[in-house]
Length: 99
Image (cartoon, rainbow, N blue to C red; front, side, top):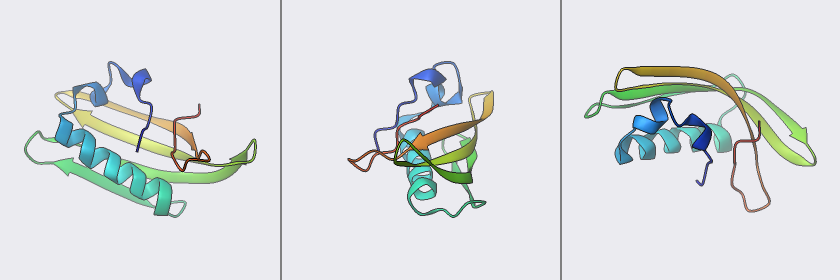
């Protein structure tokens, strides 16, 4: 996985439980690795009531890397956030945020 979400320090992600992060990152990886453009995946954790939706908007190439733009909307502990983020697949197979 190894996504860099430091920029989300006051967003719902910062308030996720460990279980929330695991469920979110599994959904995120599912979209990045296997989701077709236009495909959405929702995720939720009934025990914490956190959840969200991830949608693949487009695929493109940047500096020879395969990249994807995703719309990500999450909510946790009374906080909600939505935005568009670019991820580019590195040679090691990981997809860090590339905005």
